[in-house]
Image 1 (cartoon, rainbow, N blue to C red):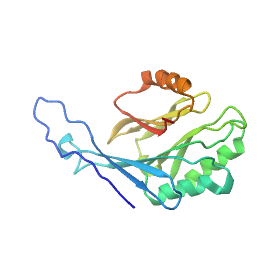
Image 2: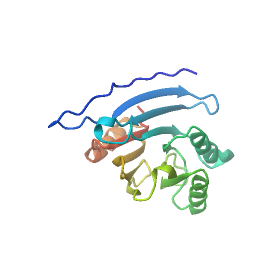
Image 3: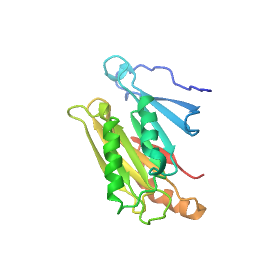
Length: 208
C-alpha cells in the first residue's frame, strides 16, 4: 500500500488581515479489499483561526461502486468507509431507480445502522447506469448542526448537500457522476459551474 501526503504549513493571523483559509492535504491509497481508489481530503483548521487547539478534522472519500443492490455491495462499501472512519462519503453508480422505494429505504436503514445519514439521487430509467449519494457521519451532526439536500439532478447525475456545523461553518458537499459522452459532459459541468462556490467540496466520477 502506498501513500502520498501533501500539506501546507501553519500560518498565523495578523491583525487587520483576513484569516487564512482551511488547509488541505490529499492522500491516495489503493485498498486490496475492494480494489477501488479512495481519495481522501483532510481539512485541518489552524489554531490561529480561533478554534480550540487545531480544530476538527473531516475526512472525505468518494467511490464508484458499480451497483448497490447485488452481493450486499452497498453494506460492504459503507462498512468499509465506516471502518476507515470516513466522515463524508460520496458514492456513484448505485443503479437504483426512483420507483424502487424499497431499496432506497433499505439503504437509508443500512446507512443509519453504520452511523451515517444518507442523501440519495436515483436514476430515472429502470436499466439506467448512474445515481449518486452523499453519506454524512452522525458524528458531524451534534446539537445545532443541520444537513439537508439542496439539489438533486433530474437523472441522478449529481446531488448537493448543505452541511452547517457551528464549528466548521457551512460546506456544500457534491457527489457527481458525469456523463461519459464528451458533449453531454461539457454541458453538464457548464450547468453546475454556476453553483460551485469556495465552500464546495466536489467528489465523484467525472468520466474524464
